[in-house]
Image 1 (cartoon, rainbow, N blue to C red):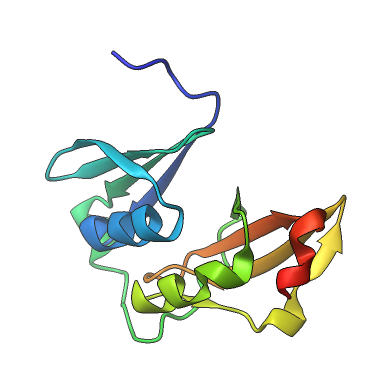
Image 2 (image 1 turned 90 degrees about the vertical axis):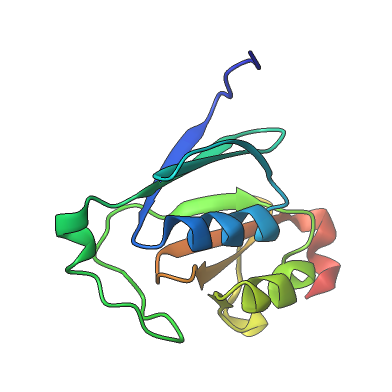
Length: 135
């Protein structure tokens, strides 16, 4: 059995398989485990589970394209990547969106930019300041 990651996050989704594929591609994660109701993804520093919403909650979620932001949740997942702009096309192809590069901001030696996954969950990509030349 692999060692447990120090950080593990869970995203609930109406279309768990689609959302799992999004994060797998955007964050270059590996599928560790999968059932009909969840997918466990892992990278070097963290794990991410994408879990199917219970049916009674999924019935209340209306998906549209492009996704409308689900800003009512008090949590935003933030992921460190080598270069934000290098991930933009992957985000778009996988059904999500990223704010324009001019919306990025710097804080604590990192560049931050928000986006939406295919179901409208807000997430953030970050890159180290030494790599800010990509913007």
